[in-house]
Amino acid sequence: MALPACSSTNRMLKAKPLGLSPFFEQPWLAEDAREQLGFQKVWTTPDRKVLADGMKKRKLYIAPVTLAYLRPVNKALAQQEITHGGVQRRENEIAMRLREEFIAAFRRSPGPLYRIVEKPGKDSLTLKMALIELNPTSPKGNAAMTVLKFAVTPFAAMAGWFTRGNMAIEGKIVDSKSHRTFFQFADNESDKLTFLSVRDYQPYGHAVNTMRDWAVHFEQMTRAPRGMKVGDASAITLHPN
Image 1 (cartoon, helix red, strand yellow):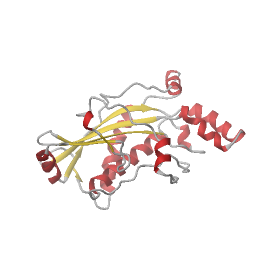
Image 2: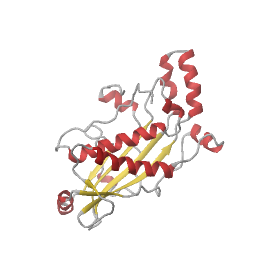
Image 3: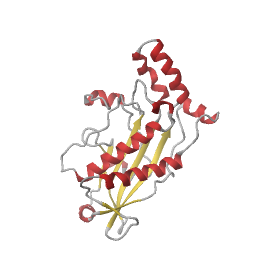
């Protein structure tokens, strides 16, 4: 169960946008979309023909996620646990899971705008995604925080910032025929604040939920009427799983 929160509180608790990678074209034209969409940054091509051609198509191929732009782990606790063998690097598995979640979101949708296809064609679009950051949750750090939560006060849960992981992606929709890009998005999400959740003791448990949220928001965004708000995921949850 995600807790409702006002937009200002949710923004304060959520991860900050990252600098865009070379994967993202024309980053200087990216716009802040946090108030309207489920992503922090978006870009739409200024080329009217590219946009018009892309909007006519209703088939979507979701390409394997690239790791070419993945940045090194930069959280101190996560680095230590990886170095000592307590946490394994799983970026290849996460990249495959990200693609699977996006495919599943369209196949589960009651009225998807796009039909998922197995390979790109002249009448399709291609969704390309890049994994930009993947800092695992610190299980050992969260185990220590759990003791603190019960021994001191439930509000000690708010002191767990340094044990939280995060995941960041960038994506672009490309015309499969012309290879021209007409839409891009980028987002960075950290572990949701919880009082007690099994995900806090799984290095990539929060990442799985983040990927599912991104996939659902992206699918909803593709079919939402112009101007309709697509809600962002809450930064707080009471769900234990």
